Every structure is written in structure tokens, then in C-alpha cells.
Length: 389
Image 1 (cartoon, rainbow, N blue to C red):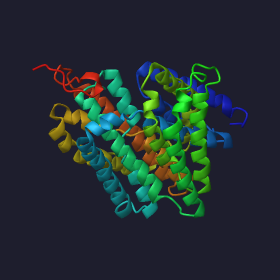
Image 2 (image 1 turned 120 degrees about the horizontal axis):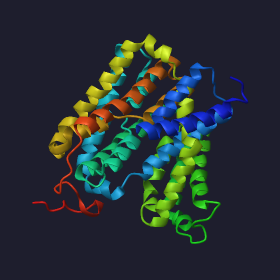
Image 3 (image 1 turned 120 degrees about the vertical axis):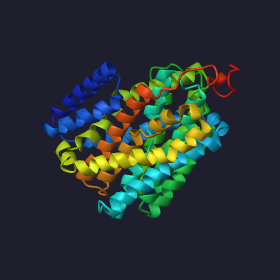
Image 4 (image 1 turned 90 degrees about the horizontal axis):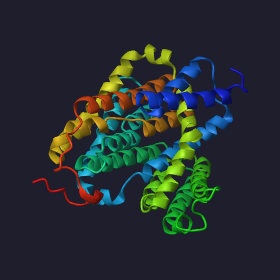
């Protein structure tokens, strides 16, 4: 495929992926990865602009994931969410890393990367399913969201700490990240609450967010680190700016629109271009084993705690906590571009990530969706259970 044709092919893939997603009700990210992999087999290759835009897309997704977390919800159900979320991260991380190192004979770094990629829970999948099914304001929904945050925080910490290559610039990156987060947390209201900035065609709020993320990316590259963790924390601490008023919700919707139009699709398509179905089929046995290890270890880490805290939705919680997508893909792409894993390992990991986003979600919705009742719906998102007694 010629270089001039690639941008047009990108536009076609983005549009077709959206139409397929709407038609079949699947996550558009899954479709973009699959179509990207098919395009790769037909000769489409990455260009420099695509690689950088994809990197920015991954950081933007991480930031958006952080903005979805409800801080008050976390405080209310910290014990339950921490136990479920931590075990949801730790058991798959140890199980996958251990198997790939001792039995599949991957390198130590590749095994740790595999454990990181397959330890995730997809906040995007969980959030969209809860909203679409009306469970977001129930006990199950609130606990699921907060537990997912803990799991993804563990993944973000692992990706940032284990694979960092300390240099003098690493210290600069850490200091700059902390300073940016503190300043943004304290003074972002001057941007988001400024009447002169609201509902303007130039969208200064969105450009402000993009500027902060680009600062993270620049100093992360300088310090040979990764901007996932600071972007996630920034999104978490700035989440009130996107939830307090109609105007701030409007900003978040616009930010999603801009990001999902081309920035995040580029991330998933570029990730898909590096997948090789022949390579997956050449190691199909390992692919199946890794998928089963992820599901089994998620079950061991989540089900018994979920049965204790939310017995009416233990299996549903376990299945949704078994999903993976955004962070798993981010970790896999990072591993490939950093030379930690090769294309075979990358294809296996992303293949398992995509399968875990589809299969557990389908089973959960088909056979284990909780029945709505007055006893599980909560008032105002944080209040006591609605009296149905």
C-alpha cells in the first residue's frame, strides 16, 4: 500500500468501525483493532504521524478513564473495592507472569509485561455496560466501578514502575508530573469555570487538557518513562470538573467527541496493524492457555470476595472484572515499541485482551445480568439503599 493511500485507508477504517459497532453493539475499539489487523495483512503499514498520534491516543484514553472515577464513591466503598480490585490485579499478574516465564520460557521482562497486560479490567467496557443496562447507580454498579479503578491503578503502577529506565531525566519527569498534577488540581477551575471560555468555538478547555497531556508525553520520552500513571492520576483528580454541572459535562462530551473521532481510533488501529493472525494460529495452544489463565485467576481473585460483599451479583461482577481492553492494549503496544516483546508475543497478548473484552461481557449480559429491584437502587449515587423493605 502506497504512503499516499494510507491516510485514506485510515479514514475508511474509522468510519466502517463505527458503523459496525452501531450495527452489532460491540465496542468500537474492538472493531478498530480487528480491522487494523486485517489492513496489516493487506499491506498497510504505520507512518511516523500515526505512531505519535497513537501514543497520544493511548494517553488520552488513560486520562479519560481517570475522569470516569467517582472519588466520593471510592471513599464510600473503599474496603470492598480495594480488596476486590487489588486481588483482581494481583492474581492474574502473578499467574500470567509465572506461566509465561517458567513454562512458556519468555524473558523476565516479557513475562512481567504479559502479567501487566492481562491483569487489567476494562473500565471502558464496565462503564459502558453499566450505563447501558441502568446498573450504574446500583450497589453492584458502584462497587464494580470503584473496584475497576483499583485494578487499573495497579496496572498503571506496574507499567510505570517495573519498566522505567532510571536516568537523570527520569527524576525530572517525576518532578514535572507531580508539579503539573498539583497545579492542575488547584487551578484548573480558572479554566473550566471561566465564563469567557464556555461554549466557545475554539474550545480552550479541551486544548488545555491536551496541553497537559502533551507535557506528560514530552517529559516521559525525555526520561525514558511512560505517561500512563500521571495521566490517569490527573484524570482522577480532575474528574469533579467533568461532573459537577451541565457545562462541565458538556466539556467532557466534547472532549470525548474530539478524542474518539480520530485520536483514539488511531491508537487501536495502529495496535491492530501489528497483530498477525498467522502468528496467533502458530501459537494457538499458548493463546488458549493465556486466555484461560486470565479468566481463572480473575475468578479466583474476584468471585469469593464478590459473593461476600454483593452476593446478588457475584458472578456478574466476576465476569465484568475479567474484561480487558484499553490498558491491556496500551501495555502491549508499549512492550512492542520498547522491544520488550516480539510480534508473536504481542499478537498473543492483544488477541487475549480482545477475547476477554468480548466473551465474558457476552456471558455476563446473557445469563448473569442482575435483576433490577428496589432493594439495590441507591439514591443520589451515594445515599442509602432505597427502601423496598
